[in-house]
Length: 199
View: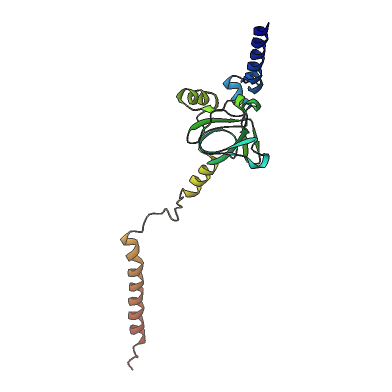
C-alpha cells in the first residue's frame, strides 16, 4: 500500500512539474501559404538587425528591427521597419527569429508604421523554395518605398534646349558680306553725288 502511495505521489509530482505543452502552444492553426499571403497587409523579406523587448508593455512584446530588401505586398514598407510580436509562444509570438538572419515577414496588421506578425501568419526563414512560392503568388516584388524614391531623385533628366542643327559657314558669312557690299555702295554713291558741280 505504501509503495502504491509513493508511485501515485511521484506520478502527480511529475505531471505538476512537467511543462504543459498544450498550454504553451499557439491555439491558432496556420493556413496554407496562399491564404496567409492573401490575408496579409504587408509581405517582405529582410535581415533582422536588432531584437529587443518592448519597454512600453513590460517586455510582453518583442520588437524586431528589420533591414528590408524586397517588398511583395504593402504600402510604405521602407528600408528599415519595426516588426512587433508577442514575446510568448503561447500568445502566437514569432519563434526562432534571430538577429543576423534573413526571413520572409508576413504582417497581418500595420499600426502607426509598426508591422505586427504572429507565428500562424507565415513569417519564416527565407530560402529558394519559399521565395519562388511567394513570387508565384504575389509577383517579383519591388525595392522598399524609400529606396524607390531615392532612385527617382538621383536619376538626372536632361532637357534639350535647341534641337536645330548648327548654322553652316555660308549662312554665317553671307549676311556680313551683304552688309559690307551695301556699305561700299552707299559710300560710292555718297562720293559720286557729293562732288561739286563744275560751272
